[in-house]
Length: 491
Image 1 (cartoon, rainbow, N blue to C red):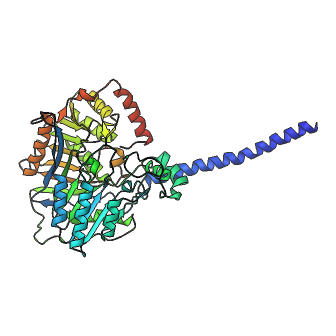
Image 2: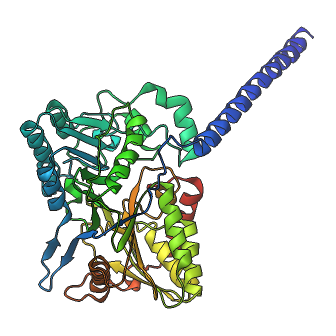
Image 3: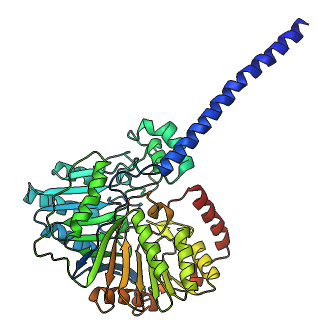
């Protein structure tokens, strides 16, 4: 009897403990849900998701980089963007400000890329040494310090020269992977990332080892993905990074002058404000800028790019031709808008990267291959798609061109991939919107660019859709949909 009473008492005592455990787990679940909701929908920091006024200018310069195989199989590299960025630094007289997502010289063993990041560092340092009082800013993403696992020697070199180097603090931005982010913010973010790394660098085998805490931060995927170089004279908005392993990627860029430079600086002030402070250089538009000209331009960041893209696609009608050159396309709203435009009779031509490699590492074709299959099937082939003929590089372009039957033609391009992460106020992004007459040099240059690579005028730039449509594409489509729903993506 004593033994029976003891066992009964033990069971009651054990049951008495469980409500506290259940209560604790319930409170933790509520907390994580609250963190998810807040970090997904919290107010954006001031100045983020910015749209400039519309300006009129006489000229916008279109620049491009193209890598492609010649008829004898040798790789050809047409490159304009980096060289022009270097010239902007050389010609600056008052200030230089750079915001660049990828900026490092880390590579996988056995790779050999042009040392563009070191060349650009040397140019900025030389400029600072020649003009010690010149205001020079370099803003970049934490990916270049391997999420604070190790210092970046190039950034250290700039700092020692007196250049303002800012590593963007993206934590104030909204989270795009809410399930993981809630766990990371609750349990891990407090420990920081710095320390002696011991895990191999997956982004570049000759890069520094990485701490576990840095990889945990990396998995909370978001970034300052902008790409801009600006002085008091001119500015370049680009799809390309100043990054050794990206040096042969195919990219596009736009060079603009005039009052819009002030708007670019204003948008960069917002980055400084969330990243520790500082004041961007002062810009005063020359008195000769009269805000007249045949071209209309606007500067857009973050979600304002999404608004502009959807507006332009939704305005496309029968008789118009909509061109797109894109590294990643996965935004459900953009895909739906393209399908609706095709129904209205818009001729749509997409040049997509096959998502085959990333800095020498093989990829499985997500998201573009299942997206291409979906667009082709749902439009009954009305949406025409070609793959850029990549080898070990990427078709890294992010641009649309709406050739309208009447009125100005529209071009929109810059850093922004057409994906939820890039378009929905998670990453920091920047694009230029241009409206130009069909007979303007800028418009003609854009049209010639697309016609050349679509028709393979002087090389095999692009391939037929079937080239990368495999039997496993539908399985990749399932994985792609799951990634979109859960937010566990790098696109």
